[in-house]
Length: 451
Image (cartoon, rainbow, N blue to C red):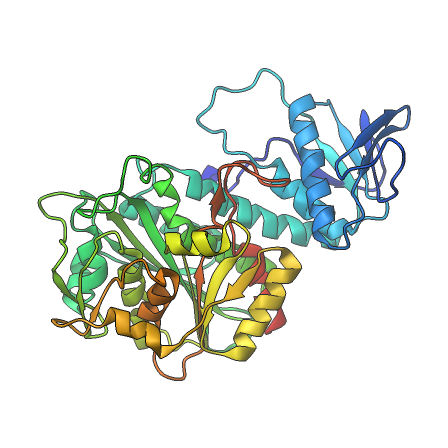
């Protein structure tokens, strides 16, 4: 089981006290006749010089690290070393670690593999970056796993092993326990599948006593849409509908290894949304853990249902300092922000400002969504307390407001709709195609700031 936590990159990245390798990379921010565009490289007897560009952002260093990782993966040198030059060493290393990852466990082993790459830098900086990036790469790896490997039951088994490895307390609530306690929303979403729903609670106690920051993650291990079934083009990539919860696993891993002061608790809401004779239906009325009844308009608006019970459980049992939920919730968010920013709905200005600043710093950027009560008009039901879909118009906001209706007055809460940022099949400078692990670095940076 250990191998599911030790995610191997395409090549090893080491810290070193000296610059030594068959290939030496030199980073520069000086434009020349041969180095005109970011990523341009010149080979000389001294090694390879790579141009980082003159963009005045920290992200240029991450992109440069990612481009170096791409070169190493494609050229397979026996060994390499990196002269950081004028770069921000920390962010260059972030790009290198994230760029070195690729999901290849089900592919035939390559005939040639790169040797290690060494970086000369402070041990403390190297160790911290490695912890955070390893956690993010684990979140990416788990998000990539198909539903034939990760379903609610096997995810709960992983979570129990995960808790043992990283020193967390773990509680798993099965579908019978959830049903008896009244969590009818999460149970209903999973009842069409052979693998029933699970709610997983993972607790990191922190090094300083206090109320926990509670992170609620959507783990729809596969989303067919249920009886409101998706199209043939809409169903591929729905293994990534668990990405919010995978980010929560990554954040907890990093918090534990970094020994953060702040207690952090993860609530993983796991279900598989499948059609069958046992599946929940449009027009059903569900009884949620909060006591509110929910009229179902679309079984494909299932993520908000599992999160509603997760948010309620957290408030009833965990005494949160504040709550953040992470979910690939709406296609409307992708339409609004593309793959550039996540939508964020928040009830507390100070909390949002801290999360926004952390997002700008880490390049896991967010943008605030409105919380106007007018959006609730579209969620009014004639037959229940609320309905689960207000239709296409304002979909990203009505989905967020649905969740807000399960948050107690005065509770600081942020909702992260990561539908457009959780994965990108085109890839980018330091992400291979697929999962990004969005939210791990953003949240860890924010957690460090509130200690």
